[in-house]
Image (cartoon, rainbow, N blue to C red; front, side, top):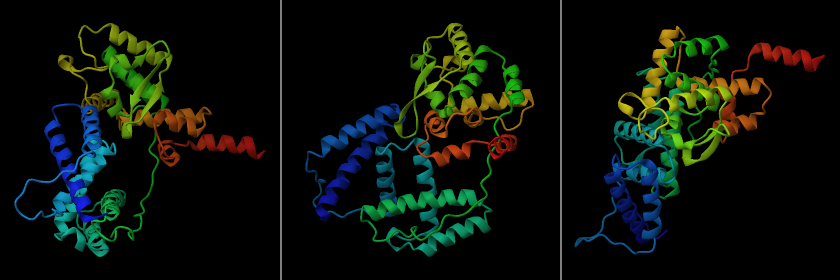
Length: 338
């Protein structure tokens, strides 16, 4: 790509990012994404040049390149949590190494990871997550021709012990139901289990998103992908009772004090409180998601359908979620080996 063309693209990207920065915390993420798409399409029809009496110098500083990368990932639909992780991890790396990006080597990154493991006692699982963040950034830099070679390409995956976390038992589920103090809490725990939604997806739902007649709703998942999830008759009943008993005018499906939308953090705190009251350990929203996946597989649903319900693009992700009981393995063996 000619230098002049890349400069023009950088100007457009900078304009879009500046506008996005002004919109953050003023409008919702969906609106920001729509505006970004419109600007990207419309600005492509114009030749842009910065107003300057001096020679135009490309700002390829570490900070500016990282900003461009984050802006690109935002346009691609990465979530705010993902963008924050990419930004924080790569800033920490660049600040520690202290070199221009073009001079960073594989050894520099490997040394930093070694320091994090030996000095800061960071687990292999976390280190591999960091490696993936760096690889995504440097791969983008290579693709965009800011650097000639990705220094992360020769970094092998950092192996770690993969443990399958246990779902809730039937007894634990019942204890949590009994610990619910009001209709909202009971509707929430039943909804989390029956739909298998991510906590962030539940926090964004509005009442109008629920199809009570067909016992289903449409959620917006990772990468702004919509999918249909389903409710059990029990969850549908509790949810209707909760909504019918409300006297507020909020459009949010679940609300907290003052009629405000119950946030992701609010749901997590609520479940932690229920777990303490019920004397159930390790209570958090994601465990309901894992429990549903495990139970569906145990009852014979194929893993492709389970992946669709959970919103997984890769079956390997679904497999990690599911706890295979040794008793089920033994029963299957007796059935098919005889």
